Image 1 (cartoon, one colour):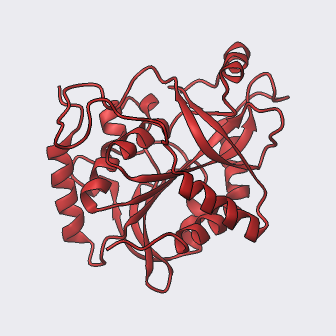
Image 2 (cartoon, one colour):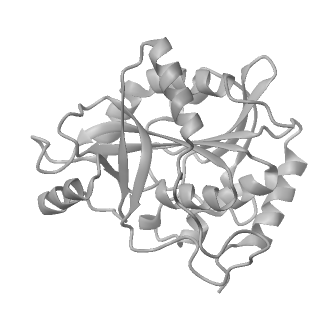
Image 3 (cartoon, one colour):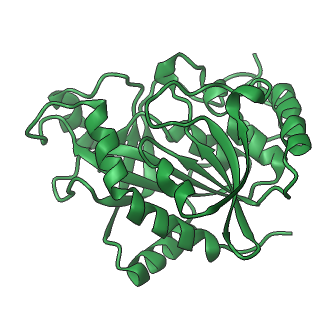
Length: 280
């Protein structure tokens, strides 16, 4: 089995190019649970529903709208937005989860900002804070590049020294400080879900060096690295993890907290995009 659905992605890319009248931006954003309000502070130019794009998976999780959108963040500065993502726990294969990243590559995306709702493991974190991801641990139990590899597309053995761009991390910190948006920095551990983690698992993850835990993002970042797309990751700490939290977990609570911090997240990401380099 090939590790990439490349032919299907080519067809999807052709469809997108045919149906978007605007030029495709060179920066893309993936909006996680409850962070869909970003589209309210930009000027939406065009939208395609996921269900209309050939081979594009469908999101079935609350807080994921299922739209591919081009929006203007400032004069002449546009961004491609995925309003919702796909998860391994929904039954999708790693190749399906990362299908949009291959499409992004074919569309000419150079920068990718990924966001997610995450549980805080680091006891110094607080619910409602934002965390810049500086590294990750893949504990999903699967890998998006497993299978027959085409060396003409990407390397068989992918280097992961800098999965999250140091340059983009520095830019995010600078912009965050200028806007007065407090933020943390740390390691994100990706797990399969859909259950929230046990106390013992969280204790183990903390010993492994994880600061936050979630059920997405890692596959997408690996695939973006495969295509040499620069990545910035931001987690919204929507709950403290099991054993640290004083209450039991509910997805509705996660979405509610994400909605509460969506304004500062959106302002931060918008300003980061404005200051990203232009590509020709």
